[in-house]
Length: 431
Ligand SMILES: Nc1ncnc2c1ncn2[C@@H]1O[C@H](COP(=O)(O)OP(=O)(O)OP(=O)(O)O)[C@@H](O)[C@H]1O
Ligand SMILES: [Mg+2]
Image (cartoon, rainbow, N blue to C red; front, side, top):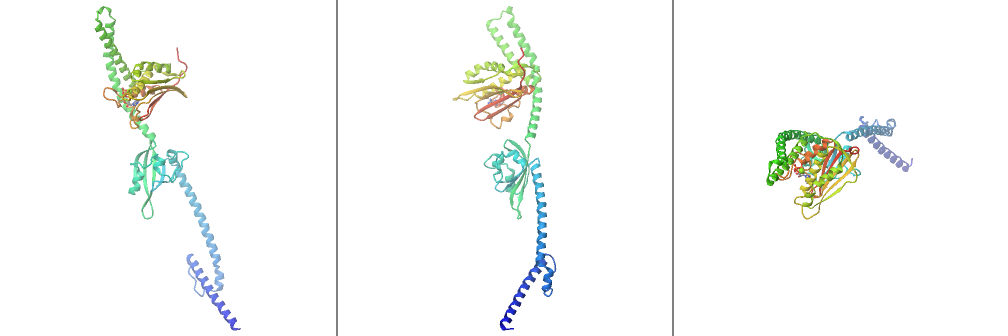
């Protein structure tokens, strides 16, 4: 063999050795990854290498890893779908909020109650989307949990006119740093309404019993005063002097007013049985507005009465007159102290399915939001002593309920007040 041939053969052997070393290292690495004892140098001859089929092992491992990966992914997808279904179908609102108070995720119930349709909630501030505010509430449980890293258990919070019981718990990263909050809240608005109604009903029962008792006691002596005064006035032979006659007339008039108050109290305590008939409500409205005409003119109040059609309701006309009178008087009284602008009271009637709707509105000072829920409470008044007993609206509410109707108030401070009541519509008026 020539010297050039010898050099070539040596190069070939060296490169072969390097290649084998490389393959042995890689095969041993692979075997150790797969948990098998590494091969000795002598075990790693050409035939072992072919037998071991490292590429085959790698391909098989990949296949197994891929299969395992696929199965894990499938299980993860099932678990994720199950969790999402639970997340969305629980009857409570769930939100995940980050440390900047932005919504990371929220469930369907949360969206249904507090996210307006077509609004994208994710990534937006929770106080903006859920509370309609530009900064968090002072009593916000999420703020507290973010600041303290501690959960908040059951706090009642108002969001967009709804009441919620809220629980918050922190989300921590691997170092224990608070990175967000999970907020779970339950809508308790209806529960609160029922509680309020029960409280109201209990109060009304107690006050009603008291008022009814007093009214009955007063009814007899007042009836006697009225009776004897009327008798004296009618007795032509009594020789009454004109000034005495005048005084007697005042006694009769005042006793009649007292009688009206007693009837009001009996209405309020539901001890006067309503006498129902089919009545045109517009006639009652016109009559009541006429009664108050002097008050409207003396206080320069404009009335805007629009009664387009004849609406017949099934009602006790005297009681409905009392309701309208109370509402109009409240509007007149609300204008006391209002000067330098136009004062208007408007009255409208209309049909609302099976009901006739009456709206009495004024552009007076309005009712502050914080007292609006109390105005139908018996004895709730903002008027000075001697000016209002706080009974008017609770009497109205009692009467309307007795008629199987409903009444509610809407008001915006500074803009005015609107009372709307509904009464069951009836057929044409009888005789
Ligand atoms: N139209 C209105 N504008 C502003 N506030 C009103 C109006 N109607 C009612 N209110 C508020 O509701 C409260 C309760 O009214 P309600 O008629 O029951 O009692 P009152 O008018 O104070 O007393 P009473 O009717 O027994 O003389 C009032 O004191 C007043 O604060
Ligand atoms: Mg009143």
